[in-house]
Length: 252
Image 1 (cartoon, rainbow, N blue to C red):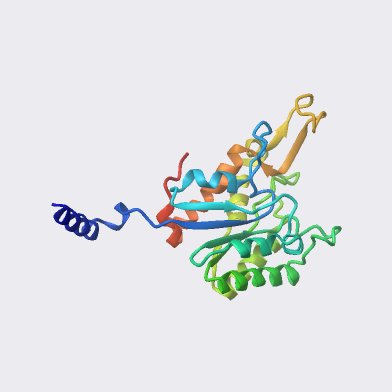
Image 2 (spheres, rainbow, N blue to C red):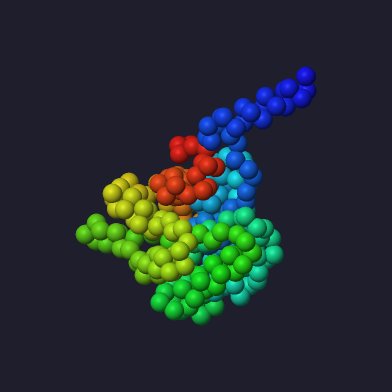
């Protein structure tokens, strides 16, 4: 009886459609800055989009978020964070890399990486070293700041870093997710007022860290982080990326 049952189940698995079968377990490593990183203080409204990403995915895709506040490609490497990731990386894993916000800080030599030179060099190094471990690298452009000009147009002040990431992805033939373009277009469509809920704005007299209140046009609220994570999973599906099999939903 057990033999017959085993044969029946084996045959059933062969004829079931692919989408009905559970995908194997795989790990996705996230590498980036504060716009992507986990925010452990849930009393404060800031969230990283990598923190919300698992909410869209099946549990068979394990998300490990290495992103950290204030990091650029240069600083992530020089602090040893990249080497730590490589030590944990296994064959068959995926690594999504997204920098740019802190690479652009010309006044900070510990973080600055010129978009046309060092930034691209670091990205190529990351890609080569991930591939050497038998894992799959992926690049994403940095998300757009909420920075509107007086005429209502959105200033795309990280466009050169987004273009550099796209160039590296094309040269190395790795998957590219243009989150800058998607987020910039979305903020522009919403406009100055309606885009505010996606970014930090806290009143005075509530948070000890910000007694006078704070308006932050770089870091995301729960809604903002959820939206960027949604953009990413939608791009997975649009590109028919292998990780599409792990997308559980597009709406929370």
